[in-house]
Image 1 (cartoon, rainbow, N blue to C red):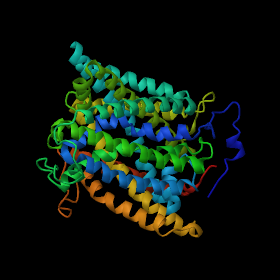
Image 2: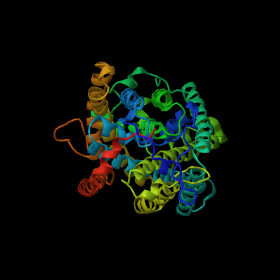
Image 3: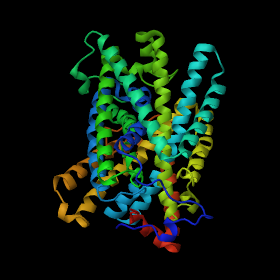
Image 4: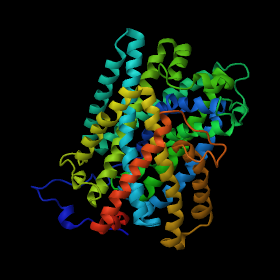
Amino acid sequence: MTTARPAETAAQDSAGPNTSLARHTVGLAGVLFQSVTFMAPGGAVATSLAVGALYAGGALPLSVLLTMIAAIVIAASIAQLARHLPSAGSIYTYPAQGLHPIVGFLVGWGYALITGLVGPIVNLLIGYFVGTILNTEFGWNFKAMWLVFMLLSAALTALLGYRGVKIGTRFGIALGAFEILIFVLLSFWLLAHAAPGGLTFSVFTLKYATVKGFKGAPGLIAGSIYVFLAFVGFEAAAPLAEEARDPRRTVPRAVLLSCLIIGVIYLFTTVAAAAYVGPAHLQTYGGLDGGSPWILFARQLWGWGWVIVFLAVINSFFANGNSALIASTRTWYAMGRIKLLPQAFERTSRKYSSPTVGVAAQTLLTLVIALPLALGYGPATAFQLLATILTAVMLGIYIIINISSIGYYLRKQRAEFNWFLHLVLPAVGALILIPVLAAAVGVGSSVLKFVSPLPYPISEAGLAVGIWFVIGLGYLSYLLVKHPRRIKEMEEVFD
């Protein structure tokens, strides 16, 4: 269903608030790097994949390969849906059309949470990394520095987001290209200095999955939680559909290309890291205590060149925050437009056509989520907890989007239905995510013997996700009784 904006809404009264996005202004490069920078390849290699090594050990490259295959399957489903449903509310519109508007609401409710969490996560990480370096190099107070730089990052991201999607996506292209270049170059250096016997195809088996408590398949699956976190974001091109040029072609290409390109980079960097330290020792380089192992690698191989890698990591986090703000505010904008969120979220800047209330809300989330968690558990643990919540919700969303692709092409595009592309592939994509989702939310270990629980407080991620969706179900019940039309409008595409 495609719906034109009503004339009284589309042509805003000069005295009223602006509610229009900058339509059809972003080309393929901008849409592609919206997904690339949301995935934050430099930051993901330095943090998410490093944490994944704590569980997968030397089998981390295998975890990356399997996750990449799963991510490409999901990207294919999103691309198929994006061909017909270009909408700022894309992530919830797909299941609303393919399955039912109630399912669309629950997906939108979950996506509204996780896109809101990315800002707090990356701002926290910027503060943590800058604070760590300033403390290590100059003895400055760690706590004061991470607080200051976390808040500074949030303020700068908000300013960039306010200036509009065109400058935001151009910024993303520049930042994304820089971080990719630096980490690919450092990976070549790691390979050139590989440990004896370090470069081996055994990293694509379970031979080096030897972490205590996570040996074999449990380590592979637990590691995949954080590897999936590194891939989360390839779908972020979809909420730009109303601002992209020729969105029915641009968005599908951006989703698939970003997943493939960044997946190859993740494979290359993890193989290089395993070769450099030796696959049997990769676990000991996992985690974020004192920063990232990649900064240590740069110190060892590039001397003072480690500063360039540090800047690339910070650059990656900032670019991630910028693209997350673009995705979250467009999703909230679309939900405000149909009054699932307060209608104020539909309000945009008259000068820059940016969702001003959404920008302010995203900035506020850093204060109310990241700050207390970091003060309570420390920045590194707070990151793992928030990251696990984010990954768990996105895994559920990815499963539903795969199923939605089946439903949409069976029910509404039967003439285009392809049994492999619209049935087998999405069904397999949904099934292979279930064990990783079970590990992330801490359930199913009694049935799925290859799933091991995560340590506390990260194990509380499932509780946090459950509370959020209980609130969502309560709100859904209210809407179904009082405003059922708003749920139905999740199917609409404002093209």
